Image (cartoon, rainbow, N blue to C red; front, side):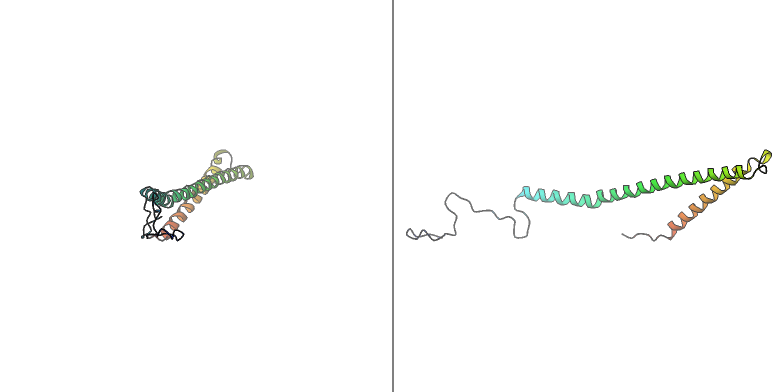
Length: 137
């Protein structure tokens, strides 16, 4: 818009000489007009997607495995101590009955008990695995 020489107080829609019009922040479709901004935004989106789809599930898996392994170690340690306690009880509380040629029987009894516990745990794990519904993706 051309301003008359006597009417200079009225603002003009055209930029002043020597100044450029301010660039739009983004194009009409919402994408940034500057390629550097577009690349930075693409990088941010890709990193967020990678974190969501790879890093976070791996962290959850590591925590699950860590708690599972710790629980397994504690359960096995407890079972070993229980078996040793049972063996000691059989050896000391049976008196003279399991001595001499029958001194091996407390060991056989404890071994049989440990095998029964192992087989029960194994069958429970297999039944749980068979009963679990398959995850659909």
